[in-house]
Figure (tube, rainbow over the protein chains, first blue to last red):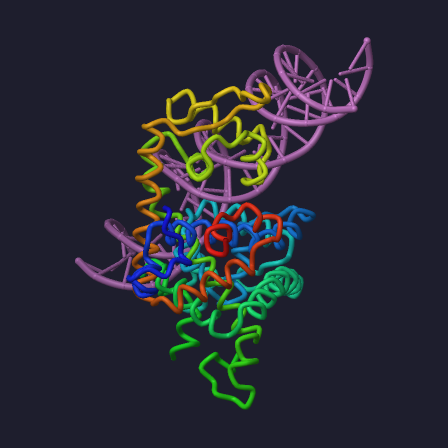
Length: 170
Length: 170
DNA sequence: AGTTTAAGTCAGCCTTGTTGACATTCCAAT
DNA sequence: ATTGGAATGTCAACAAGGCTGACTTAAACT
């Protein structure tokens, strides 16, 4: 505990960044950063009838237009009952469109309407603005490290859903 | 969208890491990584009667033993009613001790009991294990960048509560 | 003495997660 | 053609953990 990260002990940086104290600081940084990261969209959604769950659904429908409910379920990691409640209000409010599948008519393919895309843009722009500012402040090398650590932290199954890898490494 | 991060266009890395697509990938990486990051403690708490709210309280009481209820409130960013519900069960279950302040008897100073410290260690070790693995995989330079970006992303008021800065820069 | 502050409590509401049971629709295999 | 299973949707009930508002108690400040 007394051995802070600034210490220039014999171990050098190669080992020092793995001390419990360093790890604890990383844990706390994740907590505070994630809180800030969700704060802006939360503020926007507060005015409407929506919450974070709606944001997540809108985001992933935007990323993967035409995705099925089942696929969205596995990405979001919630029950179909939870997702359905959210999805129903979004469809009722005309933000999301549910199209019956052609090949498999049991499936519903989800798309954003124009209004849905507009809200998506508003929400994501708020998040992008914060991330853009953080990226600018930290610099490109820090950003590369940031991404590497986050990717290493994900569960392998979740990494499958993570579109960043497809684009970045493809 | 067609311009992935791997593209070696004329802009070079100095500008390319600020494209909307890059930012979107950062946003998604935060989402999936944070989910993984909280999954392990959540699993442990599921067996007990506790949730993520209890974990947060235990964490910050561990970091700042003797902290007052009001201080904890401002760190966690919840209402006293919400915190009180959590705190009450932790005190009843003998994980947290509430001591009347000496200088100001209105204040209650919070401490973990031995049992509380044991649970804290179990929870934080699960998180440290994941972070340690990610840090190892990404390397020290990536870790430094990771921390820089997270710190830049925090709200300034939250940065006050963030103990990493005190230790790292002090 | 009167006001403010710290903490706690009660009641009620909302969002978002959970189970379990069940209906419908459709594909696919027998 | 019928049956089995998969995908979807719905109803009901429940819990965690946020929130607001109103109110009390005790202590400290002015």
